[in-house]
Length: 196
Image (cartoon, rainbow, N blue to C red; front, side, top):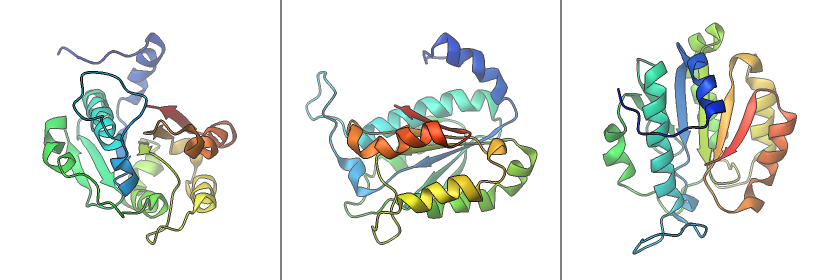
């Protein structure tokens, strides 16, 4: 198999540890994902959006994850139905072809709880890895900001935290909107925040 993804030596050395893990990706499909990126250059007729960037990120994740998760990756969205057992990024073309609705909220807490419920067996076995790709502050289903609620879930409802590692992938070039996540990266165990 030829892998067309370049990763750092450090990251590559960690990949074998993912064998046997169930990998879940939670994708932010809130309205703000239609925002154009300002830190990109290239021969674009129209600047790419955060949604475009998320498509590329998820494609790479699926390519890498399917080396380790033979059942395929489960993709949960904040405002759409989940897609299970994705083995090839081509399986998501039709879903990602439809951009997010303009006024969709960012209900990360609700979807994270749904993943915890759906993946109880994997949590008990310590074989669940959650990747959350988002561009900003979590809200409830009505658009009210709920940062403290998400923190409470990460600290109190993710039991035990060492068996449910979560990586949050920041899909934004707006550093101010991600300040809280960068702080949590230092304060909450088994939580990693990365910029895509």
